[in-house]
Image 1 (tube, rainbow, N blue to C red):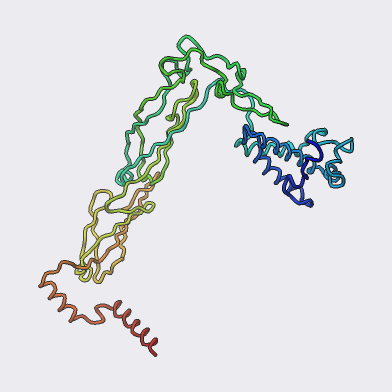
Image 2: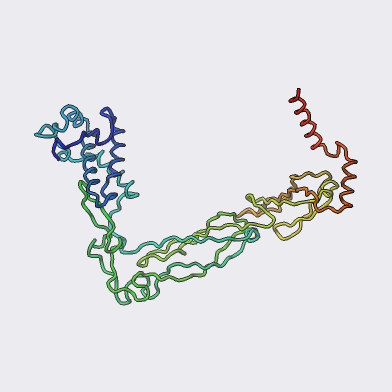
Length: 381
């Protein structure tokens, strides 16, 4: 690239001339990631910009080179005035920066070494299981059917026809990775021939097609402990998909959810139950029977003049606490039901009752309307 065609290095990085080292490094990392060849494969323009950005940062990151560039511009590195961007090599800071960029581009440091002889761990599986609140209360063993891949019994997971074995991949020499030159750098990529396994199957097993795994359904027993909560995850080790080439199996994760219940709402180990009662029962008091999660009936005493929303606590009638001998409580919340579909006689009785009622019979409503009257009187004055 001729001097007359080169852009100003500060302009290339998008920073001002007084930018500090931290700003320079941040700008360089952002642009290098944007134009990196592995993110723009086949884009010649991106590759040119990547080299331009790398050249600019190589000069501006070193105080001596930056000082020379500030005085003489691009001419500082021509005709022997100073070491060019490629002449002095890359320092430790530059290498460290590129290492960080590789981590962000590839999601982690580039692995080195062999491909593990083709053995690869199987994938983890997820199974969603819904159970009733009663099952969560008592605990039980649930039988589930899981569709997954299992190790081929014919080739014992090798993928090769019985009597033969996988051979070392000739493309990567068994390492599972190949090196590719990209500008200033040499990158490692997964071998496309063996998919990183380091081995290839020349004579595949006819039962599994060379995969070393076959698809089938498996029946498993899942132990549900008493008191288990909604959203709990149960791990069954080595019950996931079979590994490649005889590799270890993945895990199976059971995600539990509790079905909605007709009576109870759960909050931790406590249960809540909304119980409607008649207006007469609320006024006169009495006893009611309510269901409990253990299948028994619980008796609740309703005192006179009970209002809607009042709660009654039944100790120890809630859910068991997992891995404990303790139990939560059950809370009964009453809702006073207004009578409807009244007969003529019922209307007469209620009318008579209303005429005989005083403020003492309805202190809450009397207090509200008294305050409301005062409010409007003050507004009119």
